[in-house]
Structures are given as C-alpha cells and as structure tokens.
Image 1 (spheres, rainbow, N blue to C red):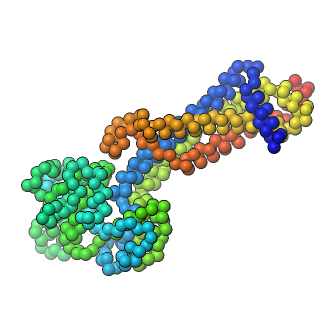
Image 2 (image 1 turned 180 degrees about the horizontal axis):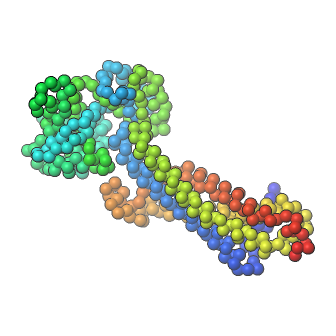
Length: 412
C-alpha cells in the first residue's frame, strides 16, 4: 500500500516538476485541458440529447398508452372476449379505456381529407391527456345537449380550413359500408356530423391525420356496436410496467397481444436509440483524439526524466515498477482531465436546466423555451468506462521503451 502511494507521489512529482524543455509542459497541459474540454462537451451534448429524447417521449405519452391490448390480426373485438374484472385487479393498473380507431373521410365546408378517427370515452383519460396540447377550444367530445364533437389535429384543421369560432358549420365524417351492394352516396357511406370543440398540436405527423371523436360515433360509422380495437391501460408506477405487461400476457386469451409504449412505435424508439449511440460514439472519438497526445507527452517525459529513472532503478526499482510509475502518471493526466471535464460539463448542464441560459428558437412549440436537459446515470457510467479504458491502454504505448537498455547507466 505504501509503495503504491509512493509511486503515485513520484508520478505526480514527475508531472509537476520542472522540465528541460518547455514543450513537454505545454504538450502535457494541452493533453490535460483537451481531455477536460472534450469530456465537458460530451456530457453537455449528451444531456441536451437526453432532454430532447424526454420531450419526444413525453409527447408519445398522449399518442400511445403505457400498455395497449389488441387483437394480433388488428380486427375489432368484443369486450366479452376479455375478462376486464380480472384485468382491473392487477396491481399497478391506474386506468383502463377501450378505444376504436378507423380510417375515414372528413369534410368541412368544401374541403375533404382522409383522416384517422380515434373514438374515445368522453370522460376517459384520453380527454384529460389531450388538454395540455390544445391550441384552441375544449377537450370535449360531447357538448351540451349530447351533441357529438371532434377534437382535430392542427394539421387536419389547417387542411380543412376549419374556423373553430363558426358554430354554424359541422364536421362530417364518412366511412364506407362494407355490406353495401348499391352505388350511391347514401348507401355507400355512413355519415356522422360533429361539432368542432378543439384543435390540438402534439407532433406534425400525428396532427396531420388524427381526429378524436366520441367512441359511440366511431362505432356507428363502422357499424360495429360494442366493439373496440384497443384496450388502453395506464400504469400508476412506471417501474412496474414490465411486471404488469407479463401478468396481462399470461391472463389474455390466444389471439391478443400486449405492447408497451416502445413496442407500439418501435421505429421511433429505435431511431432514438441509434441516434443516441451515434452521438455518443462521435463524441467519444473526439475524446479519444484529444487523449492521443498522452502518447507523445509521456514519450518526451521519459526522455526528459531518463536520468531520474536510472537513479530509481539503481535504488532498487525494477522495470515493472518503473513502467507502473509512468502508467500512473498517464492515468493521472487522463482521469484528472476527465474528472474535471465531467464536473464542469455537469455544472454547465445543471445551470442550463435551472436557468435556461441558452434559449431554443421555436421552443415554445414543444413547451421548452430553452434547450432541455436531462441527467442519466448510465451516461456517467459509460463516460467513466471510456476514460478508464483510455487511461489504461494509451499510456502503455510509450512505456514499452522502458527496458534494461533504457535504464542502464552506460546509456546516459
């Protein structure tokens, strides 16, 4: 233990002591501060990326429930096929809402558009969840006097030229009758007329196609009373989502599938994971490039301290101990710069989180005036693992020259 501390002390003295050439000092500090700045930039960018990821995921909470139950073939089903009483008894389930989605034709005045209509319960959690994203109106799919109403995506409202303040016009929704054998507008289509109660904005793809309407109206459009396409389940504790999902999978009859939010939009979350990985690899590569200077700085330091190394060898240090001495010096430079960079980057990210120092242009559209920040433990784990790998591997390259010829007095 004492010898180990002594070797760290000697390594530190080698680093801080006066060098024969100022270039060695310059190169050492360039390496130290280069690693520090690169690691600080890495943690800041990763935290910003985490913030954007959390913003995107929070938007999907409105679009996708925590858990969805549906038929494997995608067809509507009767609730009698499931035992909702047993499902409600599963610990961790906070809400259950059957929904029904259909592709339909929407018409407002002279404008028409193919849309996705999502039938929801007037008092269900979908109505409550959409409320923060409303640009105009109310999150109601049933108005006074039991008048059916629709909540439109902003893209749908724009394409249909909707005037939400004009109460004299209805939104007409049409669905094709599968059993119709005659060719006429009245026999081919089922028509539903709804007032427009609100306009929401979540994300462009969703806003351009989706309409929320009373589930009774969607069932009427499709001619399938008391049938649903999904059972949307909200979880009270997100940490138990996998446990609840497993219990549901064991409980449901054959032909039904259970999906969590990630599985409901696998492409989106796969893109987020891949982007995150690419960003980390690119920034880690920058840290590696900044760390490469450790090879030249240690190599020059070896030449500068050759006489002292020979003295230490003469005093009883063996080749292995001398190599460890310079390995530890290289580790001190890499880990010292990395630790300060990690702390500095974390402080800057925390200040951004608390005070929103750097504003984000157009951020009010997603509810964030400044660049969002999110800290995740796994990022620190991988950055520390990266620094440890660099500190262990790179200094081994220049110390290979420490051998018996290098420490022999005759070579002085």
